[in-house]
Image (cartoon, rainbow, N blue to C red; front, side, top):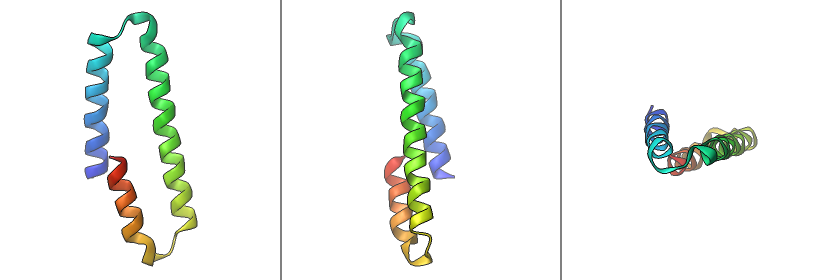
Length: 69
């Protein structure tokens, strides 16, 4: 829940910055880059979860998730 709240807050702030501070000609490029970076981070976390799927690794996985927020 905290991860999703952080993600939604980040989206709101990002949208505000894109609407006010970036020329329209570059807004699409910046938005696409942002989504690509988010997808890469999610893919990396999913890969780590697949590799470290033992319960003993839960603390590490939780800290990585928290740090990504």
